Length: 273
Image (cartoon, rainbow, N blue to C red; front, top):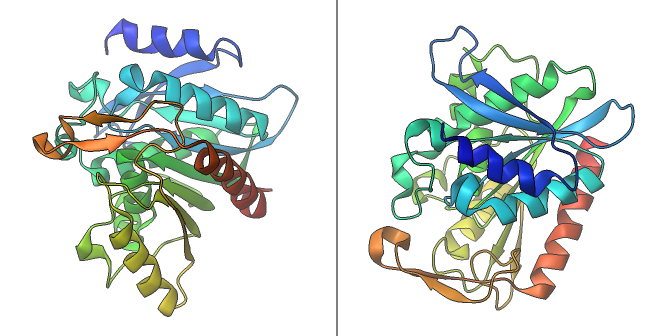
């Protein structure tokens, strides 16, 4: 891993605690590759509930500000935060925004479970109260991680004592092939923008509608007039490399951002507290 990756993250996290960086195998028997996971905890004795935070396609260098914002928010809510680096070890330190399939969601699901295993072993974490949150590529990863079929395959060799208790997916991709078969292992909240032209809201709405018709614990909030990355402070702009060069629009939306923070706090508070 390039040293600059965690130098950037460490500097950004300095205001809320440096935390610690640990090497974690993606399989407990060491068969899979190891990744770096940064763990940051709130002040106090604990134990605390935990949250695994999955970065976007921008990774931990280009997406450092966004990761820092959400780390601070989750720390303020009282969670130990674990941040796996899914891209640097796999040769993509600057992200995969041009082609998300360079590191597919199911590959990153193994990273999420590796971070869960790291958290549940800590004395300052309530092992059966660990949530998952991710944005864009990380949101797609959240849905993959929480899928019953994928979870069974990964957990069989992951050495875990618990599943994730709840999850939040920000503007994820919702593949059509999942719509008729998706079964989550725990409650999921999807937060997405009405005008998102990178990961559109409509397939996610269909996924939720179909799942809820069979009493699956999925819910969704679609923010009117909001685009991709609505929870950021970034100005509206085009990302030319998105969708393999077709491009997409991203930009923060004050109203959607502030409501989404409240949604996360309430949702995790319901299931992790």
